[in-house]
Length: 261
Length: 306
Image (cartoon, rainbow over all chains, first blue to last red):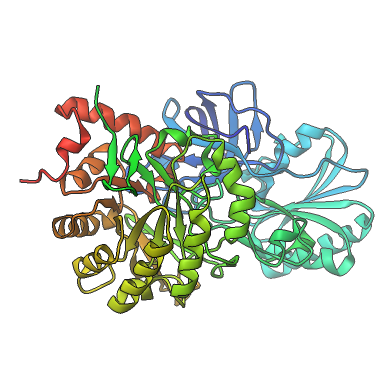
């Protein structure tokens, strides 16, 4: 990405989504403004933990204001855990915007997210401000997620999939709804099993789908080759078909037919 | 003013660097990935991702695992092959002022020599680094660096056909790295790069699976710095060609530690993953630290360990 940059950034807001939530909303003010970004792109955020060796983590951009960038972070591992020790005024480092972005809406665009995979759709629905249908599955309570930050023009249908039968309801609904989008497009972000399910449906039903992969990344710039995704022989750039491409630079968004997950 | 220039060698294959900060192969892509984050021409040199005669797909995922103090990787030398490097990447590198070192990987002596012959013709390439030390591929790689006869064979064949400076990147996964260093020197190497990754593994007790698809991988990062320092110190005392130090460098102080034990230059690897601007910053930080402790010429400080 020609416009990516490395910058320090001051935390201007850091709050759990609700009392005791493992998901935090963090708003940072980068000391050099991030420019020319689009929904689906991400940044690498270095939590500045005191480990001798700590790696940044990739996060979807949920919104960029005139001087701020907002992310939603689900605390899961040793780096994100560090978020609990931070507060307003602390300075972190980040680089981005990185990666590609979702295609703009067509007449029929269906959004599907699981859990924290909602983040890029906060910005997508606000960037394009057009009526969209959004299927959202979540394991923990809905109040942990920024559903009300999505554009009011979006019709959100939520599924609390905290057990196998409720998960099945969500999956069945995805299939039934996708069938109505055979002429349109499906955009999805979430955990790998969900994306795999959507990919397989897209191929079975011959529907165009774009998937944003949640792959572990170390550098975010295409150098470490640790976040690669296996491509199929239909991958758009034939030089890289049927091999591996970096999720950070060739993705994180891939056309479902073009990858094996 | 601090004079940071270094000269690797003194003969017709001398490589002059503006400063001792290089990037380690496999951690800096082909250099172009980093042009947003700094001027790659401001670095001493950049070492490209390992290149082979034909494209290599690399190992399956997962390829990288985070461990205490570093990373374990088994990427398996995924690369586009030398033809693509020459047609698509070198023309772009030529437009930068970068001093470019190609890192060569092959399965046979013949292939190594062929690669060296091809890349020797490229004006955008200033030197070659032989990867006889990758622990993550089934054939070639570390096998060449662990076998005395094979190492002698590959280095002598490559240096015979190469028209450029040839550095041999050594593995620490041997009984005596000094012995291998001497063999590389005796067979025509112009410099030595010490060290490649240490072989290691990581496992998950819950899934009972290894954390890398390849099971074993190469360990890098700050946790290997003491091993690397020891290797550089021992090798630098034993050979008369320049040694390039690499292993866990995360600060200007680390750079001076390697130079103190005898390194002419250093390579930055895993630290670049933590911050893509790090190698560029380090050039300035090194000057600042030298001023602070009164070093006027980097070369004066080299090998002055008491």
